[in-house]
Image 1 (cartoon, one colour):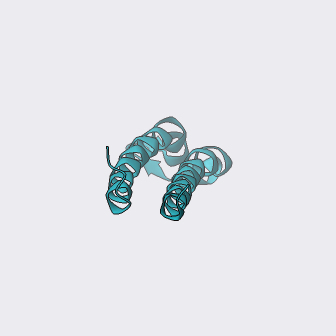
Image 2 (cartoon, rainbow, N blue to C red):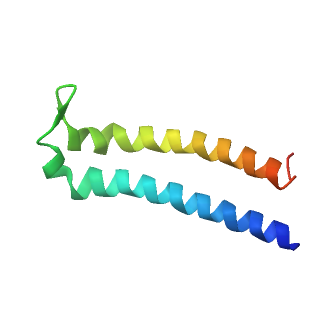
Length: 83
């Protein structure tokens, strides 16, 4: 691999790790570990911990997909590997 492509893949992997860490935080920490503490707060009439477990992690995942697409388009242009 050329050095610039190695840097491209390094940045791609770094982005994926950050986005997956955010998803894990929302899904596991907010939806499972902190559920009792978050249930003291209500969102739309439902306990916040329940909301994170049922909908918040899905919404977060979909938003992270769009963030990944936008960031990768920018990265592809920067390294001239657009399709």
